[in-house]
Image (tube, rainbow, N blue to C red; front, side, top):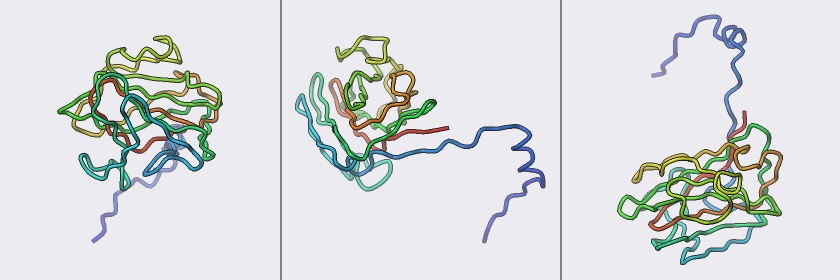
Length: 189
């Protein structure tokens, strides 16, 4: 059985009259693997650990999980040949799952534009001393997301000075605890 919604005859006309913007378009950059051509690295006792459970991925077959470690730990990729072009008005995103038994005190995302990693946003306490707080190199985004569930983190590209940039790297940083990351990219209007 099919359900056919009862739309008014002038639905398209209403859309045009209201001058609503078109729906946003998502571009996926990281899902189930790093972008083509990238090399990977890790620091602080972390590694690229791809998992299919605990928690199950948000989308796809695997997500990447940080280690349970004290202090700053991270895993990253750089110099991807499959780059991500960031246009004016774009919003960068990733999904994160904070371990409710071992929640971090801070999570940070950093992006590499081919010359600099000084494009970062963080949630939670300001414990990772990279960049200058309140600038594009260390933009505060608010409290940590709720632990024990997948949450979408969003950062306007303008907040981290990335409009007009071509990205070739990304860093997933945690202070204490454990986080699982999945499905990263951008939304365009």
